Length: 143
Image 1 (cartoon, rainbow, N blue to C red):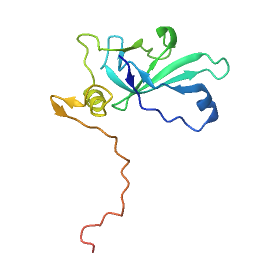
Image 2 (tube, rainbow, N blue to C red):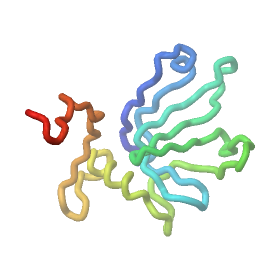
Image 3 (cartoon, one colour):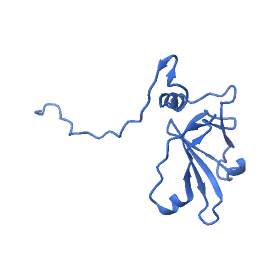
Image 4 (cartoon, one colour):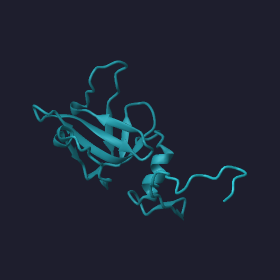
């Protein structure tokens, strides 16, 4: 079962826009082999090498604000600390813990299910960044 994704904002850099393609739907869960939480995908982008046009990696943004990567052939590059292989799944593996923030926000946004958590209607909409309309009054100053 695939779920719709939020279109990610691609940067205005031409080389980045030419080598990155947004994905419109995917499997809902991202799981790294054996460690950490299972996360819910919010955005997915495919990244290509500028010269060879071959897929280098896939980046996955989660509802909780974290992100993860998928590599072709499930073999991440060998770097400091190495990364464990990751996969996208229709359902989390038995015994794995799903990130509560991801689960709540994906359900509340309507991406998964009927926007109900524990029988109650749940809604989630990202808020605009906080921008004060006017400067806060200092204690003791006139209004």
